[in-house]
Image 1 (cartoon, rainbow, N blue to C red):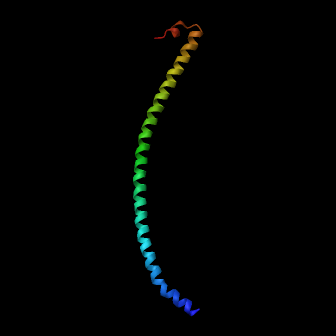
Image 2: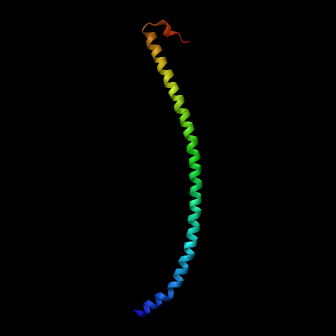
Image 3: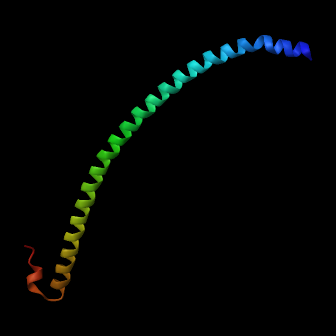
Length: 90
């Protein structure tokens, strides 16, 4: 048992050094990944902002269209009910 313990103590510094090198490389990879993620998040935020503006314009145009359509339906119903003024396309 003592021999096993002595062997473990003998190899421990080598394992610790190997772990330190791996940790440094891992930290560098992690930093690179975090930088890439931040860059991608900025691109997504810019895209979303552009999409928000486009969607707002679309919603406004669609609401205007719906109002025009409802007005046309009211005029059509009035025309069909005999209101000659509602039949004027102008």
